[in-house]
Length: 464
Image (cartoon, rainbow, N blue to C red; front, side, top):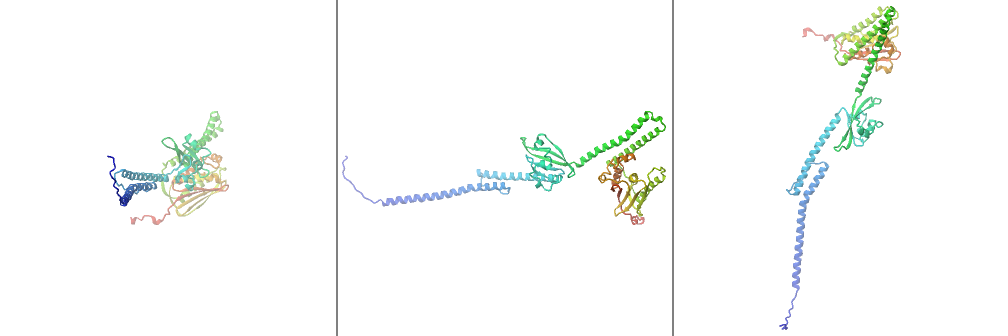
């Protein structure tokens, strides 16, 4: 069965097969290329659809970072990208609202700082100034905040020699007084507080400056006033006590010495009574309880009347040791009607005239003048006394101030006459001042408001 019966030989050409295979291969290649192109196109389209909202979200975040919150990301769907776009839009709205609130608070803070009557300085943790308002610059006499920002608070306040920033924190220093009275004439009160986070970390300081110059001066004047009152009352009381003790020890039996001692006691008692009355008058003026009995007065007649009284005292005085003086008058003839309180104004002229008599030399001339300006009546009383030193002129109207203390006490002065005179003139709406040359005399001036009186201003009953 395995015997070879015969053989068949066939011969054919394979070119058509190879051609067909090549064609099929080309078809596959073209199909693959078309598929790849189509796939790439679809991939590009899909990727662009995916990356476009991502790019928009990136641009929106950049705009938010620059402070532009007007743009919005388009939400294409409810998928993950759509939810992310919605979250970014919501974030943009929240950040914009927060920024507006922050800017509103900043404007409010700047407005408060700008209109505060106190100076405010804020620093960082090292004590370098970061914020300063205009009031602080004025109190510290600084021109521009550019010269302050970044500098140490200790240097700006001038307290580096006495304090360090650590002492301000550790010692819990809350208030210090900065005395600039020598340079700027101001005394500042500086209040310190720390800026702390919730963890307790100190991130800076706040310093509030307050001008306490007037309070400090008032406190100093009050203490000085109490000291002066105590001293002025102690002197006559000591004198009275000494003479009373002498009388108790038997001096009252001496008919020559006893009257002298009693006369001294009486004089010192009268002096204390005058002093108490003057203090009460000043107290009423300070509290505003003084009632003025205002009336229109012919100031020429009143001034002459007061001067006539001093002339009459001199004529009636028979004591040869009494000081002699002459009153020279230079008073306008025109009637000047001024609204004043006659009694209190008379007290003012009496005080000034008494001082002129006390400090004028024997036989001296006291010059009294009365003149009229457009809106004021000006009176002056000049003496030929020792005058007032230049350094004392600004204090001459202070209470208990005396240029010559020993002489003033000897002559029975309380040291309150000029202070009362100034208060009365101020209540009348006028001014009082003094010019003096040491060794040549002093001139006191009184200026009162004056409205020129015209006879045509009188009411005509027939026109009413």
